[in-house]
Image 1 (cartoon, rainbow, N blue to C red):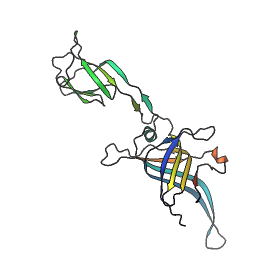
Image 2: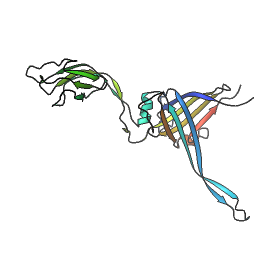
Image 3: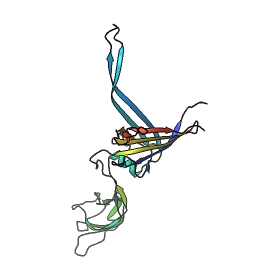
Image 4: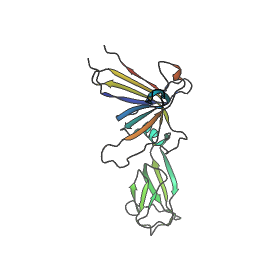
Amino acid sequence: MSDLFSLQGSFYSAIRNATTGKPGKRTWLGNASAATLAVSVEKSDKNESFSGSRGLYGSLITAKSGTLNITLDEFLVENLALALHSTPVAITSGTVTGEVLPTGLVAGDEVQLDKRFTSGLVLTDSNATPATLVEGTDYEVVSAAGGIIKILDPTSLTQPFEADYSYAAADSLAIFANATPPERWIFFDGINTVTGDKVILDLFRVQFDPVGNFGLINEDWGGLQLTGTLLLDPINLKSSNLGGYGRMMKSKAA
């Protein structure tokens, strides 16, 4: 029976417990359109000098390394956190009252509110008896999501203008918010589609580089191409069944 292979499967990430060496809660990374594991060694070769042919006499491994290259197709918070070296911060919904806009605005000027994903905007001027600006006459909302307002006709109004509005809940990811690169336990739950055998891969400590090419305009499907370096796990290294970097398991044929 042949043992040819063509693999498919799901990738998960988890925070590794530094004390026990075990993974915590797993998070599915969504569809991965490509994934490759590369392991390599550095060697110091020794050539002999007794035969006259200078043949290779010994080879000493001086270093071991591995990388995981993976393309994640889904715009998930965990994926963005890995790509941007960020820790997600949940922003709760709320309201803003009396946000003061810049002064000296003329027709055609655009300003941006402090919050994003806005709704229910009401603008008033600074007259002793404040006048309410009329949308479509005095201003227009260019982007409610971006909180961008365009001033149309401020001539009869007293500046500065003040804004009252609501904003929606959101996930915020500050780029390079983490002092150290994100590290994850990566788990691959796969299947050999040729034979039906199950294939499992655990990578104990993968430290991810920031995304090298984050396409912000996509003519076709977008994707996050990430590269992670395999780090030695001193806890799991003590187990001969696990090793220091990771473990691949393949189900036995029935």
